[in-house]
Length: 264
Image 1 (cartoon, rainbow, N blue to C red):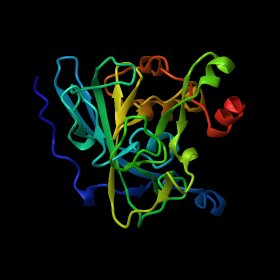
Image 2: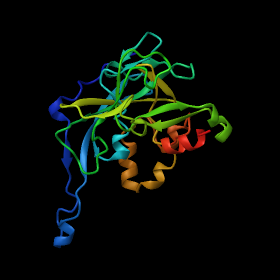
Image 3: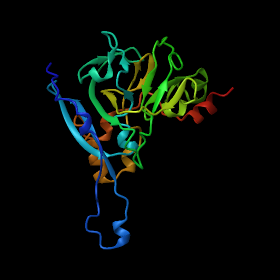
Image 4: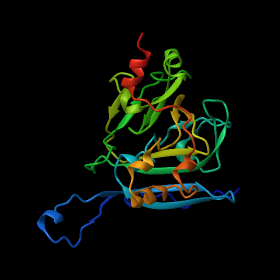
């Protein structure tokens, strides 16, 4: 399989760009409308022939789009049948271990950059979450894990099965911040962030923690207009519609809801 990809974006090539949407404003009120901020995203996707294709995209610097590319910080070790591999070294077609025990091949790898010196008004990338060793791991993790605030982690509790019929759910890692085992950090320099997608939604192991692969969640398409829906799907060259993301492997749940359901 030929998985030769184009060179990664240089640091100076990843930035947020203001886009003027009302260039010929006829009034002061129109000219003062907010201008969306754009961010660069790099996408590597698996083609039907088995080759990998890399493309560069400009898309909004907001939560919906940033969540596509900001789960794992560089150097996160992803469990594979051949041993742990740094997330930045994974390519479409590589096989990773899943929590349910069925290895799957990556079909899509995305990346963007957290840039502390460039805060954006609608951006969710205001910092990263550091998980200390063994704080949220049942696998005996021996090193910390840095995740983007849009990552979701698998949470298990026996009371969940009694309450909603499932034993595991996915909760945003930012909800797990407690100042002890998970805490907010602001690195002093640029950090490359990544996300991974499989043909079937799953949770995978990063430094021993169970973290989900990318899925936009249910009902996202209903919140978007036609143009924004098209722009969003352009980040996924291997699919044609939101239905192609398939079902969620686990329900999505906030920490507050999780605690209310598992409280004795």
